[in-house]
Image (cartoon, rainbow, N blue to C red; front, side, top):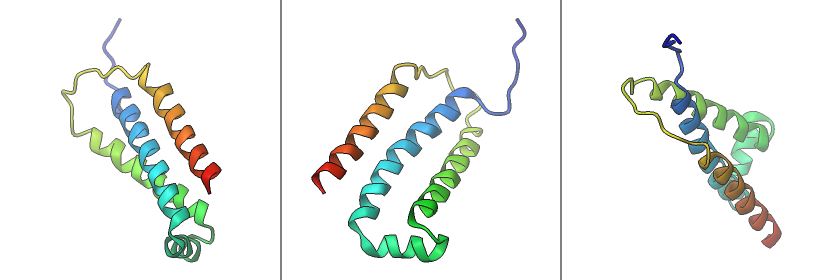
Length: 100
């Protein structure tokens, strides 16, 4: 089997996804507790949730591009971490909205 040199490495995409999941949960909680941040997002993007999505998408793209700088990175195994990060993120947001 040939060793293909892909433009984006899988571990860079996965690591970017994990960081964005964690930042998104924190950003959501901060946004919901800080009315001024919500107003700024709404005035800038027309909708606070849309603004948050645009910011997270830009963060993801920047992280993926930054991960290209590490060409000799070892393979990182995320098979177990992916469901854990998703479940913990969902639980944190669920608990936050239940308490508020």
